[in-house]
Length: 388
Image (cartoon, rainbow, N blue to C red; front, side):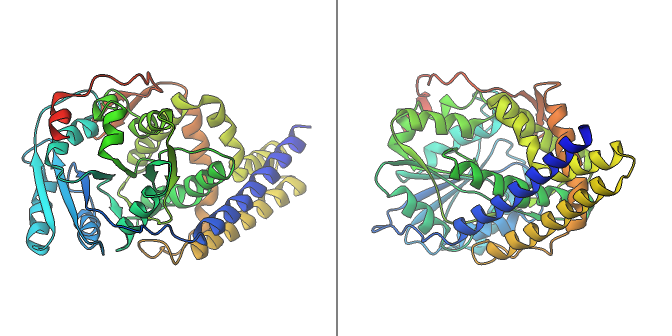
């Protein structure tokens, strides 16, 4: 009976992978939202440390085909090596409006949001795009994001992302596999089922909307700042929209321990926000269930065939996803490595189990607590009021 249940779970996970591929194809074929007008935009780019490919990532924002935009790059440490990269980009792109901010002021436990609060007074425009430091984007990224934001009833625009290993080691390969082939199709399936989440890599909104939800100060005590922002915007009766562009993020981990800590932060954050749905997400790992069936059966023929069939199907889905996203990715996809899929599923389930053992996460060398709220917006900080 146990073996039969595990085979059913294996089939279910493989079918879900195919459904994810169909969702990816539908997303990649969506017609873009084009803005009738393209008003000036400020991009807030918080940085911390000299990440691999950081200059290439920020340079892709400096190269936007957009009439008028400002790029604000900020760090909390004046000696942060990322600021050296920022100054180098100022010299590379003299026509680009780039402001560099270094401010040690802390406003709460979330250091990224503290950094953004310090950066916001330098923002000169009323459309604000907050973008992660490790994102690479296409030249039409701003056009597509602002096109989505200009649609009636839209209060917040976000983006999915694909992963690219910054190194050739196993850890970076597994990390990129997770982002491109587990997170991305899973997020699109959630959208198809009606979920509207802010995914964090991109958070684009009007300055007035940010003020109405309580400013960045409403986010500074929370690890899942993107989720909190999305919830507060929806409370205003405004919608979250997924832009039809696909940034690529660099996976910089060079050791399995570093990858484990990074992905455990994600896992514990999701577990704190939606514990039931997170437990149910274990169903999306057919190679774990298939391998477990092979082990319990002592290598019996039928469970082994189910495992191998699920592996072949997952491998085909990986190639299909890469093909579907080829024309909208910010950077070309590296060759797929389907032989890593069983290891990837085992690691993902291990992280899921470990996420419920503790709510502490390590982020940029600092420990925070994964939490899902409260969501009552505080008073707007004085510096944010002045920035408005």
